[in-house]
Image 1 (cartoon, rainbow, N blue to C red):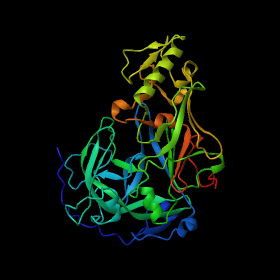
Image 2: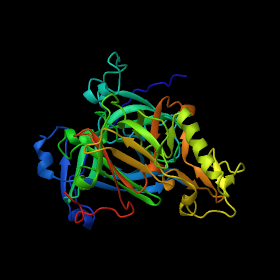
Image 3: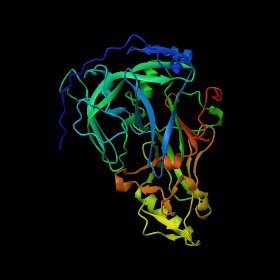
Image 4: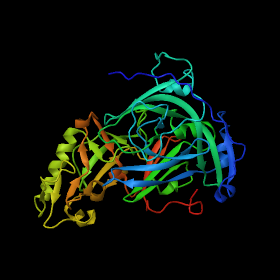
Length: 422
């Protein structure tokens, strides 16, 4: 059934005259940014990045989240950082037709609606889109797990702390979601932080306003990690780079890859590979998945591990003579995977996935396969690298140079301004 779109009248909040707050606020220089864009040269003038702590894990939580501050005065919200989608939206008290339970009270927009003719509105719709109401921009986003959000676009203040010591509140366009349908992998969060390649992405908007360059990165661990915007958090010479596939404008896809198992080719080449922080697990298309499962089972037939048919944590789990405590206990039974990209900058770029990058230890103490059948969930011929396979690596999506990079990292150690390498 088609969701009904609502017409909104939003009362604008009046900004208080004082920007003083806690002692921490007074130690930071404060800048207010309006909707007008700054010149690109101001990026070099600021020369900084933005770092957010990440919370959560692949298992048992099943998701990561970041805390952001929106509105004035700023209020905290927990969002799902998703490199697989563009629009940032929050469950919105506008009022909300259908909203799931989040960590905080529903977001109340404090600034104006985005009109239908706004370029950001146009970027979310097809060229033949007709405005139901010229005074507002309706949006609807749907996700691979069946979830969706329907709402309107609004402008609001997004409080950010830069590594240069500057605190600013640029006015950015986000979604006020008043009708949400939870998907199969729904998380109890306040909304989604869209980190995709499109114009509506938060980082694309910050780039347009001259705040930072359009570079996104994350570093995931079993205890959380960190997310960053900008290029001053890593040493580029220590990163393995490969070109983004130009044919895929909506996803961070990396060229054509060859899949290897235990250092040997599986025979699968020219694979379409997407990196997606919004997916907890990794997905391969059906034929690749079945072949990989067969190779794993062949290796395990020589060990004492047996399939744990009574464990339904994931489709395939294996048990040993006694419960496992961590993936370190089972890595000797499993071989590493790797994706080889022929279009690396200097040589072949290899993305390694050790056993810890595709296994979890369930609550029953069994080793479960964190690679799933992508065809079953409608991914067609795409192969998606999810959070489980990106752990203990810094992943970088450089939209300025159109490259994707990775390097081993201690993701539990959040970078500081003193440790940033330019």
